[in-house]
Length: 313
Image (tube, rainbow, N blue to C red; front, side, top):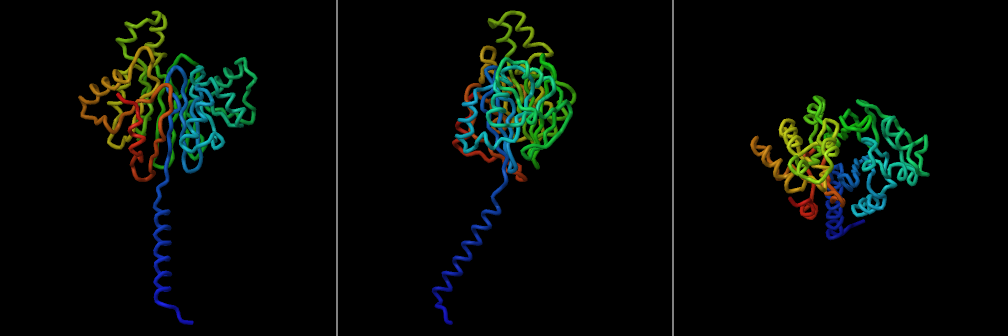
């Protein structure tokens, strides 16, 4: 059978186009995603996903807020593999048990956190099958991430921070930190992404309207991290492979994004550490856009719309 040259040409063109499509698909990078749903004393919640699953850290915000934040970036609570909990204060745990029951989600927490959640007067009690106990310096794998816990000094029993690792993505969450421990420095230096608490400006706290006892508690070694302390810590752990640092848990009354940023600018600027592409401040009452990280390429994939939506400082 004879075939016309035009038909052969079309077939050849089709093959090349198919091959190009296959190559494009093969070159699409795997990504880790991050969304901050809320950050501050009004409620904290962070979402992470890998190509193998997804996690929440803390659920101190309304469940509808979590649902809306994930839906807006094409994600769903039905896809969550586990909820990690840092400690038992209500701005981190307010809706952990309820979300776990409604969506049948496992909860990873310390024994003290489970005791606290069980003591709350609510009809939502985490099912035994969904309780995964973690202790300081434990590790496990969920949602594709290697999860490692570490001690954090705070006025709540068994407060922990977490590192999340997936291939070359490694992030540490350090929030509600009364003071930094030596292990925090080594952990932060091993990461290319950080979420750091920067709760208060010391002058604003001292001169503000809080009762003296509350001021003492916030600034104590079991309280929260101030702007200067967080900036100094970052200046000591920063390295050239560090890609992104988010500042979290800013006080509504004792801090402002502008004040926070200027403190970091002063401290890090003296050491020649670039801030423009490194530092972001997480909003208190609204979710961030979706941050995407290309694996094995050492780069943050973030479009102009996402960048413009970051907190202005």
